[in-house]
Structures are given as C-alpha cells and as structure tokens.
Image: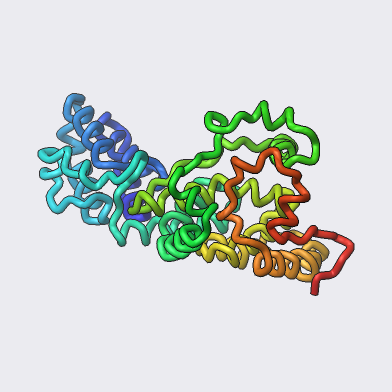
Length: 321
C-alpha cells in the first residue's frame, strides 16, 4: 500500500510512538494489518511516555491522517477506531480473513503484481495477487467443480493438503509408480514442503476462499502429474496450463511475463517450440484437474491416473507445433 508506506518515511525514529507508526506503515501488505493490530499498537504507544513526545506530536498526527486518508482502514474518524475496537469483527468471514475495500484490493493487486514480476519466487506476493484479482475466475472454477461429482465432493468436504492432514511418511513408503510416491518424490527432489502454502486472506467469500486454497495446495500435484520441474521453463509451462484451465489472472500474469525471465535464446526457443504448445494442448484436452480428489488417489498407479485425466507426456525431443 504505497501511500501508507510513504507515510512511514516522514517519521523520525526517536520515540516508541514513532516506531509503532513505522511498524504499521511498513508492514507488508500480505500480513494481518487489521484494526485490532493497530489498536494494540496505539495502546502501547499511549502507555509509553518519552521526553521527546511533545516534539514529535505533529509528526505522529500527520502520519495518522495519512494512514486513514489513504484508505488503510474502513474508518471515517481515527478516534472512532479506538472507541469501536470490535466493529470489524462482523466482517471477519473465516479464519485468517482480512476485510478490505475495493480500493485496498486495487492497491494490493498493483503492488503484488509489480513485486511478482520483479521476483517470481515471492510466494506471498503471488498469493496476494491471486486473491485480490481472482473472484470472477474463482466463481467459474466453483461452478465447474459443482457440476462434477468428484469436484462437488471436494467442495462439500473441503480437504486440506499439508503435513498435518496427509501422512507424508505413508506416501514415502508407497511402492514406486504410485501417484502418492511420485508426489512425495517430487517434493523431496525439489526441497518443497506442503506447509509452504499460505492461508487465503483477502477473498471476501468463505466458499470461494476454499476454492483458492484448494488451487494453491494442489499446484505441486499439477507439477507432479504434468512431469514439470520447478525450473523457470517448468513453472511457465504449468502456469500456461493453469491459466487455460482456471482463468486465474495471476496465472495469466506468470504465463505472459514469465518468459521475460529466461536468460538465453535457446531456452526461449524451447519454450515456444515445445513447452507452450504442449501445455496448451494438454490444458484443452485434459480433464479439469481441480475436480480430482487427490487424497483418494494416492495408491493409484501414476501412469493410470495420467491416462484417466487425458494428460500428454512431455518429450523434450519432440516438437509440438
């Protein structure tokens, strides 16, 4: 949130009050910048008396004005914020939810998009971009899932994929060639953990928030089924596949601008001649992957599952144009 961040720079870090406001201003947009956080900060500030407090009073009042005028909080009067500290609780729709206005979502979307382009490995920025730009696509995904028996069961039961819900040790002990074993081998090979996927925060609908969470948690399963590594070429190919299947704007951003990160002409040529045609063909002919209840498929043959889903094996020696 650029205006809020700008307000942080006008403060002189000489008192506890000023440091508290800097903490509010500089806090990353994907963190829980809720009204309750700020209330706690202001209480801490008011309890801290400094000899320099009178000297910095003007600075802090200016910072408060900038914070609220920038639309950081849905409060018309800063004093009302302190007096009505529980007023935002009615807007909390699910655990980890952070209510935001359209203006705030726009700022978050622009900022996270810029940071994602600058550093495509910033998972927090990519997550924020997906949540703030994805409501329309998430509704379409939800409709596709509701129209499929397996997808409908997923929405009803809302399974999660992490180390507390999936027995990773069991998957590692499955025979080679099973889907579960292929998945855990992929995660180990690429030094990835299922717990690295952050919880959804900015989607203002509990049902759609789960759809986004599900997409986020099965992304590595898509990599596994498509046989794509976590290299830049592999990520771009998966993003093209997911963009076509889901319509999520964050996937489109990665698919369109990801190739700019390629450092050599040979890799770009491979992308155009092989990876992209293969990803497009796969995405348009395969079953909708978010309709697969993966937790019930761990023991299934990896190749059998791929055939069932209509996935085409990638061959680097083959041209797909």
